[in-house]
Image 1 (cartoon, helix red, strand yellow):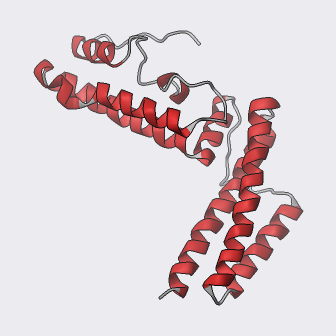
Image 2: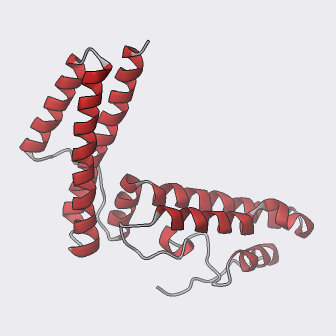
Length: 195
């Protein structure tokens, strides 16, 4: 991907030049910003290490002698770096971002069509959750849900990194959203049972 042009104001140019010798800009993709390969499989320690490096470079206090404009740009960079880290660190957000980068919108609000067997599985898990009366029962449902979620993450990695099947990956992202909601429901019910 070509290197993008820098901003023109001196404060921005000075700040951005300090932030990254490659002259990245605020519109760079998360992968460009973090100097990572554009793929689903990522190393969390590498993301965190790069985040710390970028945050050190972008900290507004480093630009205190350059004036308010340079500090504002540094704050924009800091916010952009945090946004990228959050998206890259979360498998669901990262997969959705990759799909959108490749022209496939997730469109979860309007595209709710899911395979019948998946919907049946989700109904059974939610019914089991509703019927659970102890933390032991909750742990069983949680383990089952986590196992299914893990299988789905492996499927997403294959769909994105090997097959580049963006429509299938988008459907898997929508399925992963179900599991993330279920995980929140499990934790909420567990907290209720432990009271």
